[in-house]
Amino acid sequence: MRTSFLTAMSALTVLGASACSEKAADNLENAGSAIGSDVGNTVDRAGDRLDRGLDEAGNAIDEGSGRLGAAMDKASRDAEREAREAKRDVGAAMERAGSDIRND
Image (tube, rainbow, N blue to C red; front, side, top):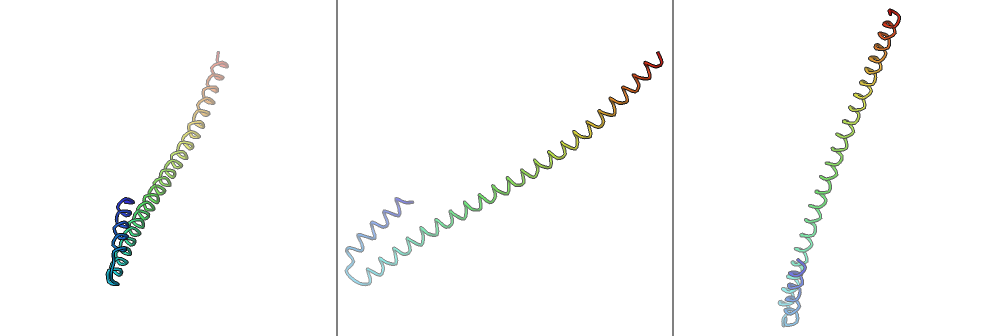
């Protein structure tokens, strides 16, 4: 894009140097203004696309973080439940072993 812009500006410079009338100078000014507007609009659109892309990436990260947090919470609850169940199982096994020892 920079090369085409520089080429266009060079052409405008040549035209400006050879402009003999006020009308030619006005045409040259209008052409330069149009080129500047086109470049500005292109840069604005590229900036908007980049901004939207970054917003989408941020939203995806937020969503992924939320899912990860929920999964970690569930895993923590599951681990706590398993630990309580294991504690009860060990306690029950010790009671049975104590009963077996008394009965022998």
